[in-house]
Length: 215
Ligand code: AMP
Image (tube, rainbow, N blue to C red; front, side, top):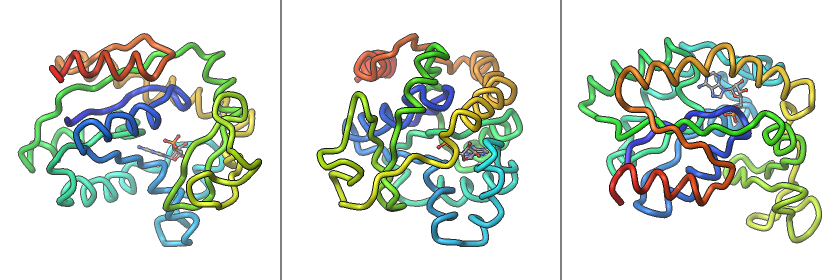
C-alpha cells in the first residue's frame, strides 16, 4: 500500500505505520526518525536540523525534500510505503505530488488521524523513545512500559524522553501542526484521497484503512 499518514504529533501515526508494515511488507518512512538519526550521528543534515527540532519548529522544506526524493526512489519502496510525518506543509505536499508523478507512483490514500488535543498531550508527556537511532522503539510509562525501567526491551539501549517532548515544546509542535500541517487535509480532500479516521484506538484505525483499500 502507498499511504500518507496525517495527524498531529502523538496521534498514533508511528504505531499505525508499524502495524501496517506487518500486513504487506510496505516500509515505514518517518522523516522524524531519519532526522533524529542524523542528529545523533552528527551528520551535516543533523547539524542543520537540530535547532529547529529542539524548538518544536519545522525543518526547512528543501532539507526535507532532499531526504525524501532520495528515499522514495530506493528499491524497498516498490512494495509500498507509509509516510509518517511527511508531508508537513503545503509546499512539501506539492513537491511530493510532482515527485510521485515523475517516478510514476500513485497514492492509495491520505489517512487523517483525528485525536482530541487532551489525549495527545497526555500521550506525548508520558511517551518514551529508545535512544538507539537504529531502533527508536516507542514506549509509554502508562500504557506500554519497558520490562526493565529505562531500558529498551528490543535492544537494551537507554529509553529517554525526547528533547521535543517537554510540555513547552509539545505545545509549540501542536501549534505548528495546526498552522502548517492541518491544511493538508483539505489539499488531499480536493485530490479525492482523504480517508478521515476518527479513532483513538490503533486497531480501529488499521481496520478502517484495510476496508478502504480493500484488504
Ligand atoms: P516527528 O517525530 O514526526 O514528530 O518529528 C520530529 C521533528 O522533526 C518535528 O517537530 C520537526 O522539527 C522535524 N520534522 C519531521 N518531519 C518533518 C517534515 N516533514 N517537515 C519539517 N520538519 C519535520
